[in-house]
Length: 347
Image (cartoon, rainbow, N blue to C red; front, side, top):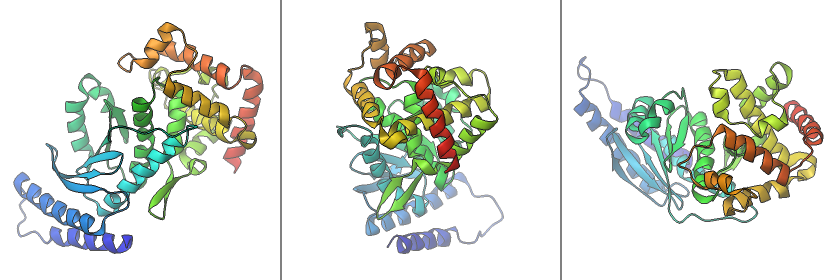
């Protein structure tokens, strides 16, 4: 069914391109008319075939070109991307991600309103939207070379190829999920480490399965960290903010932070027959419910997303939470963590 749907839609899109009747470049009006025709045919295909998890689909006319509005149980996706292969997969992907985010917790939670996701066909549309949407932070977001961001309640992505687009959607979707549903914001190592669990996935009977153990990019970075780069001690890792690393303009150091955070979350979930899984879930659940043992000042920063997650806050809270929920003996657990890192890069 899926292959038949994609074949039909692709044939329609290819036929619509036709052969140019003139050597003159198309006007903006002509180009938009062509895109509207493509959108109409893709929309009709989607309605007939009804991809898994899709509840409704309708035209979306923003300032960035003709698009579609896809609605699922938990998401509203606004997109100018008209690739039928990707559009068919987006609804089941976001719903699968939602349930996988919930699987990090002892008990699932439910959102009262749909999450908003913007997916643009190209970087030009993405930058145009970002400059209008992100205000003073737009300049920083536009420095992203290829990827996405979460801001002001929405995930904002542009097409960087099927694999990388879905990887970015899975990653940023976790930031969106916990930012809305958790009372406290997470320290950086935990927030980024969990997000990387959702970067690799495969399709399976109308849903998607996430496979963090197959994240070759993070594993390769981890291997280089263990062999060539300066490793970040665990005590320092749980107290870091990636902004500290970005300020140094050292790309290797940033890759080290992310690869080690990825490995640390996997360690807490998998090491020694998941010995730390219960503590890991309790750490997340207490952050969701607002039960972390913080003083009044740190609680205020943890609750208020409008206040910056400062370097100082990460240093205090990141270390404090790790000692309280996971282990006070950094020296002992670091040995276990490093042994786990060596193990997973060899698998």
